[in-house]
Length: 141
Ligand SMILES: [Zn+2]
Figure 1 (tube, rainbow, N blue to C red):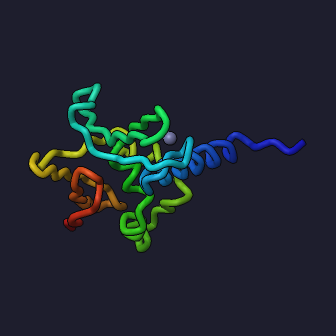
Figure 2 (cartoon, protein in one colour; figure 1 turned 135 degrees about the horizontal axis):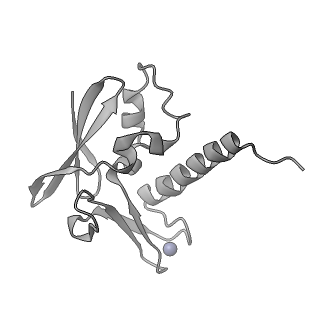
Figure 3 (cartoon, rainbow, N blue to C red; figure 1 turned 90 degrees about the vertical axis):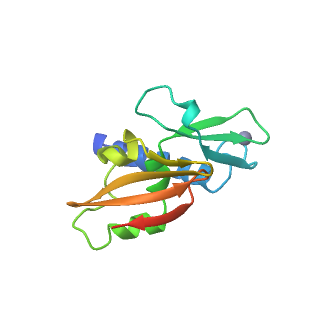
């Protein structure tokens, strides 16, 4: 029986987790395939430096929480920022990027909500502005 090496397992785990959150970001519950709405909810933060995206399924009790950066990391517009860099973005586990995991966005405006997340692209910082549904409003270089 073929088994994964540790590195292969780590790669597979990263890709599986990204696929799971990509579905949620597409509005599909990864558990039951019904519609899932996602929203940035500052009030759902359990730690001072965390402002999560919360997803609730219309059909099953599934609730997801994700960092804003993890959802953004699946978006073609964000991935294209890395296209001209030396960073092998798709091949690198998402948790190796601080902005994908632990970095909290900054709330710029509350009504309607506008949040910004700083993304490190090689040695440059890019600021991504999103609305409450994590739709990209602007990318500031
Ligand atoms: Zn569901």
